[in-house]
Amino acid sequence: MTDSQEYFDRVAGQWDRLRAGFFSEAVREEAYRAAGLEAGRLAVDAGAGSGFITEGLLQRGMRVIAVDPSPAMLEEMRRKFAGQTLDLRQGEAGNPPVEPDSADYVFANMVLHHVEDPPAAIAALAGLLKPGGRLVITDLDKHSFWFLRVEHHDRWMGFKREVVRRWFLEAGLQEVAVKNVGHNCCAASSCGSECASVGIWVAAGEK
Image (cartoon, one colour):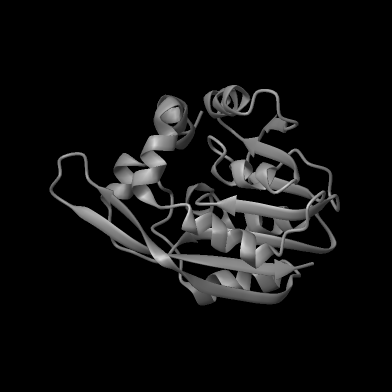
């Protein structure tokens, strides 16, 4: 088990409250807008956590496969979405347990800075898409807040948008755009001595 998975297992029951302090629902609205959602289509939520992206997809009439490496997060979603049709699968965003060429949309919200190999993860997620499907990733701008690596077990301290755009193109995606969401991710260190406010981008591309 990685430090990151151990962290998310530990905070699963509190994650909705913690997440609300980090960033708002406006982030997922920008992701949905970038995807151009159509009800009844199949969406994959990779690194779904407690279901921030999944919740809105279900409300919009999507069929959803939610993937997360944390058993505790999956259990939290199972409880949270009881009675709704939702396919929950345990797995990593870099090696998602989903059939290739099967999804109309693939989302990964605040996942990229936790994966071991970001360009490989983007390529793997792009491989899940049908022709014409869209990959939408939301994540952090490049930053220098080291405490996020220590306390939140982030592998990467954000990303430059031009690098993310290149990775999308290298994954074979077209019509690639990386835009500012217009909202920041905010967090305070556990000792309260440092506060982070980091820009959030949304990247989208079509297979």
